[in-house]
View 1: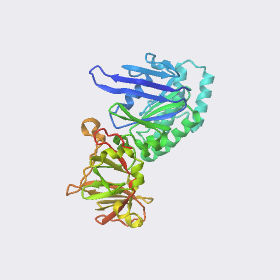
View 2: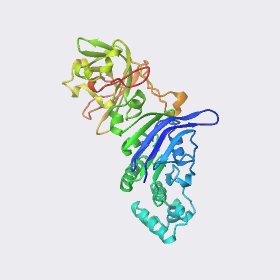
View 3: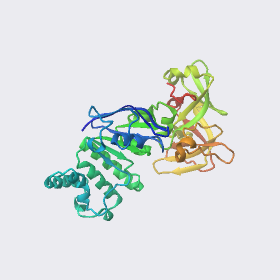
View 4: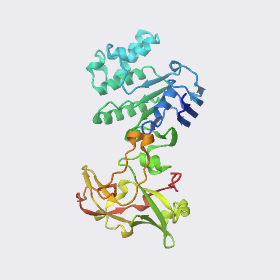
Amino acid sequence: MAGVVLESVNKIYPNGFQAIHELSIDIQDGEFLVLVGPSGCGKSTALRMVAGLEDISSGNLKIEDRVVNDVHPKDRDIAMVFQNYALYPHMSVADNIGFALKLAKVPKAEIADRVKKAAHTLDLTEQLEKKPGQLSGGQRQRVAMGRAIVRQPKAFLMDEPLSNLDAKLRVQMRAEIAGLQRDLGVTTLYVTHDQVEAMTMGDRVAVLKRGFLQQVDTPQNLYDSPDNVFVAGFIGSPSMNLFKARLERDGDNDVTVRLGEQSLNLPADAVDQRPGLAEFEGREVVIGIRPEDIEDASLAPSSPDNRRLRSTTTLVESLGSEVIVHFPLPVEPFEIMDEEFEGEDAVATAQDETGNYIYVARVNPRSRARIGDSIEFAVDTPRMHFFDPESGNAIR
């Protein structure tokens, strides 16, 4: 096992395109770190540089305190698990798992022993004589994992290994891979565009946008304290509601957040916890409200009137344990991604037939909200997030 360190790593292609900008991450020995971001953000490029499949333009890559920029991929002592499994269809499961050991001229008895142990760990003992074509998608992914495990590498690299699986199997395999990594204690760098996958698997998560590292932290800290508006909007499902708003002083201590014709009160103690808000009084800001911080006001009778929003419901999704309510407001959203850079990931905020933008609340399942109803929402304003509209950085 070994730590993996990227020090101010850059990747510039011959045509001048820079895919990675000054990327610095210290992956601790035995840590499970997830790289996440929209399509084209550079996460797979970063992984391929660690693997040695892409050259590093500048900066240093260290594995176990050894600079490996110019070390051949096969000499880096790392194992990679790919999106498409990359299994040999004519070989048995046992031969696929042990193939790399055979190439390394490991004695047959040791290969058999390692393959047997890996198969037991991955619940593949009964499948060892089968060919990949006889296996389910989840079993094929386990074979790919087994091939990595038997090498006993210093680090695992995983490039979207679950993207070919159906939704239910992905959830199962997420838990299996995370548990396996904990049991083996092998340093792991995992790439995904699925932020739910990132949040449920990683010890820490690194968020990339356009080749720049936005924030690296534990999943909960990313969720509770995003450093900037991109991280805030990218992490969380449903996504954080991001509004363009205006801050106004309300009396001596409270602050009012003006959202079109409506306003929300931010109490004095919440203002005191965010001294940076002082310089934005009377100015435009971006505010973020998590869907779960918006409740059906009929179920929150103690909520003050000056912390409520009024709207109508355009869509109600009842999920049993919660209800997702979509509602329009005549307030312009702040978009974190644009089509020019993020392509298919750049989904613009929906609008209703009158041009109002649609936002989302996650309310108690006891809510009786129905499509077309007038509704009042109670907003937990002390939990609102504030961002500088120019820099995008959090205001704290």
